Image (cartoon, rainbow, N blue to C red):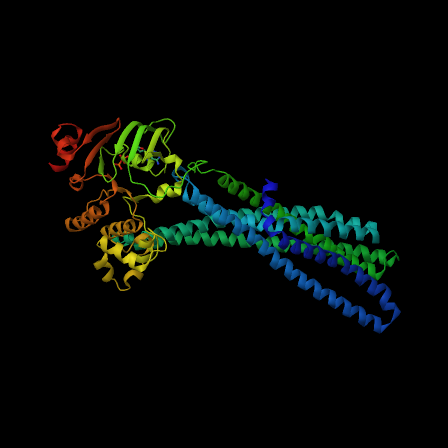
Length: 570
Ligand SMILES: Nc1ncnc2c1ncn2[C@@H]1O[C@H](COP(=O)(O)OP(=O)(O)OP(=O)(O)O)[C@@H](O)[C@H]1O
C-alpha cells in the first residue's frame, strides 16, 4: 500500500526534492542557531571586538533571511506537491468512474463516490504533503537537538527529555478529544447541508403544502445543534492549546531553573544556559508535528485504501483484445439463445432468439418487469449476455470496440436526463462540436424551433438544473433533437409512461416517426396507440418472447397481446 502511495510522487519528483531539501536545510539552520548564540555570548562578547560582533550579526541576519525564504518554499511547494498529487488522483478517479459499466452504478451510491472525490482525497493530499517531510524533519530535529544538548550537559539533557513522554501523552490525548469533537461538528454540518439541500430542491412541495414555518423550525433545530457542536469543538481546542502551552513552558522553566543552579556551580556557562533553553524549544516542537502525523496517517491511509479499492475495480464491460472499430452498421440485429441475469440467483432473460432486419420498427410490449428494457440494454453492451450471442450485421457486439458500437446506437430514455446548461449545449451533446446550423436543423426536425424562438435568450437559454425549466414534452423533444444530431442507424426508444396532452403527443409522435425513418428502431412501448405503425410487435413476458407479429395480426390472434390491448382500449 505504501509503495503504491509513493508511486504518486513520481511525476512530481523534482518538486519533492526541492521541497524536501529546503526543509532539511531549514532544520539544520534551526539546529545551528542556538550554537551560534552560545558562541556569541561565551566567546564573542567577552572579546569586546565590535567589528566582529557587527559582522557576525550581519551574517546571522543573512542566515535568518535565507531561512525565511526556505520556509516560504517549504510551505508553498509542500502544499503544491500535496495538491498536485490530490489533483492527479481526482482525475484518475473521475476517469475511472467514467469507464465503469452499468452494474457498477447499480451497486454504488453517488454519495460514496462524492466523498471519495472530496473528503478522502483531501486527507490523502494532506498526508502526501506532510507525511514523509514532517516525519523526517521531526525525527531529525528531535534527535539532533537531544544529541547537542547531551554533548553540552548530559544531566540537563536527560531532565529535558524526561518530560517529553508526558508532553506526547498530553498532545495525543488532546488530539483524540479534538477529533471526537470535530467529528461531531462534521456530522452536524452534514445535517445542516442535507436540510438546506432538501428544502431548496423540495421548495415547490414545501410551498404547495404551506409548510414553510415547519421547515424553518426544523432548520432552527439543526442550526442550533451545529452551533453547540462547533462551540464544543472550540472549547476543547482552547483547552488543548492552553494546556500544551502550559506544559511546554513548564519544561522550559524546569530547564531554566536547573540550568541556573548548574551555572551557579560553574558547571554551565551563560551561553550554554541560553542555548539549552533554545534547544528545549527545538526538542519540543516536533512533538506537535508527530502527534499531528499520528492523526493524519491513519486518516490519509484509510482514505487511500478506499480510493484504491475503487480504482482497482476493473470495468465489467471492456473492449475485447482484438476488437474492431466498425465504421458504420446497417442495423440487422440478431439474438441467438441469449440468457441474462442481473443477480446470480435469478435469470432475467432465458433463451431469447430474435432477428430484426435493418430499417424495421419493432415494438416491445408486455407486463412491467418482463425484461423489455433489459433486452434493449444488451445491444449497446450496457450489460453483457450471460450466455448466447447478440450480433449486428453478423458481427458479435463483443467483437466491436465499445466506442464504435455505441456510436451506432441512439437511445431516447424514458426519463430524459438533461445537463445543467443551455438549450444549445444540451442538443449539441448528441454530437460534440456540432455547428450552429446542424443544431438548428436538429431542433427544427424535433419541432423545437417555435419553442426556442419564444425564449428570451433563444439557444443560449439556461434550462435549469437537469432541465427543470422545461416541460416534460419539451424535454423529450430536446432528447429527440439530440438524436437527430447523432444520427445513428439503430435507435432505441424507451417510451415515457406518463401521458402527455394529445397535442404534444401528436407533435412528439411526428418527430419520432421522422427520427425512425431509415433506421432500425426498437420501441419499448407502454401505450399501444403509439405503435400501430410499427412493422412488428413483440410480446415479452417473464417466460421470454411469447408473441411476435404485426399489430393487427396479434390483436386478432386472441392471445396475450389481445388481452393487453383490450385492457388499454376498453
Ligand atoms: N439494474 C438492475 N439490477 C437488478 N435487477 C434489475 C435491474 N434492472 C431491472 N432489473 C430487474 O429485471 C427485470 C426486468 O426489468 P426490465 O426493466 O427489463 O423490465 P421492463 O419489461 O422494461 O419493465 P417496465 O415495463 O416496467 O419498464 C425486473 O424484474 C427488474 O426488477
